[in-house]
Length: 272
Ligand SMILES: [Fe+2]
Ligand SMILES: [Fe+2]
Image (cartoon, rainbow, N blue to C red):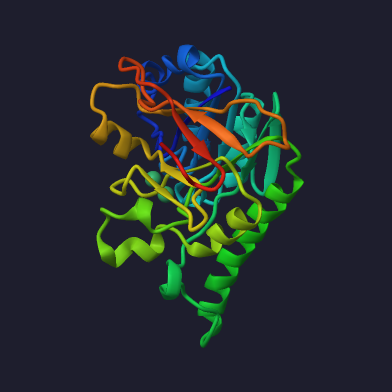
């Protein structure tokens, strides 16, 4: 199964007609489209309606999505979710979605920093509430991962679980772009790939401490790094017996137009 992923569409009231030409090529290059949050710019119902029309017109493959922080801006995230769900998008918020032996666990995630600099729940109640939000999102992700019974497993996030894919952003804001708290469940319940957005100026890829590939698929980043190509990243997930070491075939180019031999990645992170 070929999975295409992109985040940070940031659809505005004025975006009608702009997304269709960007996303239409996905039909021939993938079997499933994953959307990594910031689907709208201000989290408005009107924006969601425009996005729903764009997706319905352009995309003929199933779509699975999580919301991003922008989708919460106007307090209409439930409406945004409902509009997209009615348009056929499978919205995940701590749930899992399975199709053809591939399971997708999705959650928005949250910020809080990475590694030893991860913000701790200590001091003022406001800090503790902030940290609790990150913990709650990590629990949502873990719950979704724990429910997956498929051979192939994908994690879908908006915020980054690792520092490597936010590198390139100003160091002052890195802690707002994700948190290692999201990495812990990924290492406990391994997946084949992790996709996230949010870091518009981050790095394209990294790995968790256990070697799981992590892709930042923020659309502004893809457009900047791969100008002239459709703004989504494609990976191919190969079916295999569950007893085998998890292996996934990855399309090395990720984009149409330039085909290269696939990279073989294994569950322990070794790759060629
Ligand atoms: Fe964004
Ligand atoms: Fe964001």
